[in-house]
Length: 236
Image 1: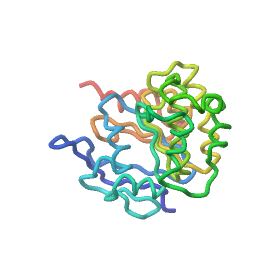
Image 2: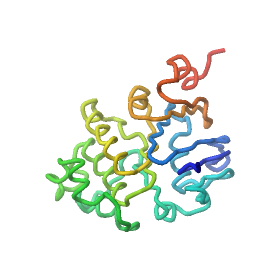
Image 3: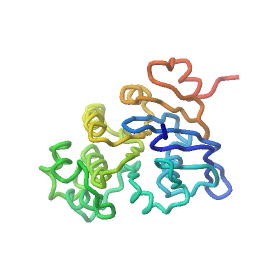
Image 4: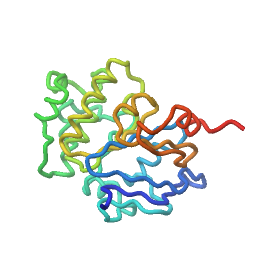
């Protein structure tokens, strides 16, 4: 069976600095994959390479067997890959509802996600729909960022550090939406520094360190010791 998303031998650079070294990753239809690792591990660079924001230096990124690694970011979105970026990056001059509608502007396809579906997923956004996006709390802004990405009805949803800087109760509310997103048919890659949270929601986990994949497996098969060594490196 062809993976929905297949990455093989991926390398990426920022100028003379090499950020990714031969990364291999697969995402199957209906699956949630978590990527864990410390700051600087290469997680965000990998997400940016998948979306075309960072150009791959070498290797393959294929969506249902079709290469996308040479596509510009808007074309990757049109192919069905949407990202919830680290830091949310809402449009400050737009209302909540306008921010959401922007998500459907480039890729207008039939699917389960529209304004009403987003408001069902995050009811607080309907109450705040006419407020400026920047007037919301951090957690509510994160909900808008997730909703904006879902409005394109993506086949692959990339979530980059969606719990960063949020209170535990807000993180719980945001991650409660993951099963509903999966049930809609979207496959997900979630970048997460919180190992416990990643293990709760993932079908499979990849650990990265210094631009390389150091461990992969299912939450049930990965020991704490193996994750620790892959996350931080084994002391000499």
